[in-house]
Amino acid sequence: MKNVLRITLGLFLLSIVFMSCSKTTTSKKSYIKYDNKEYDLSQGIIFPGDFAGKQVAPTDVTSGNPISLLLLSSGLTIHEVGGTVDSISGTGSGIVFETYSGSSDKLDDGEYVFDSLSLEKPGTFSYADAIFDYNVGTEVGTEVEMIGGTLTVKTVGNDYEFTFNCNTHDGKTVTGYYKGSIKSYMTPVGKVAKNGVQKLSGWNFRH
Image (cartoon, rainbow, N blue to C red; front, side, top):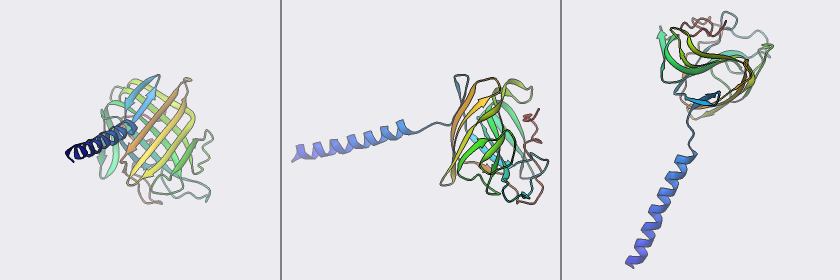
């Protein structure tokens, strides 16, 4: 009887170890990869797109709502002023997407495709820019602009899951994955956004 109990207990403990190992091996870290080197991503925000100078409700029913997505490493700090995102400081890596969503206050699930014509259709992004080991104060580091690619968005409970694969202007690729919480700085549609992607100080997205 004791041998049976020992065998049963052993099998039970072995199953726990197996399940624990399975969870560990299947978990994915958040990262961005460029030029065969990976950089960790640890934080993200969405905020009103300021692609045309202000964020307003689209006049064309087929147009999407401009929403910017910013994913960063731990070395970069996001600063707020009056409850809105104001600037970025520090040294690190990250990527920004100027997207168009069907919703006014969040990124809808689905695939977003790069649109070089900026037709503002839902499920597209018109601009993306990435930095690597970049000091936003001195502007020393690597910065690359995207000329094509896709961004896949999936909501998982209260978290977001992003997967992206983009082509850069220098003929290379930027790929990455992020899963975690995303802080929202979205304002109600129809109100002018105090801060937008072109107004963020500390990282010159547009040249």
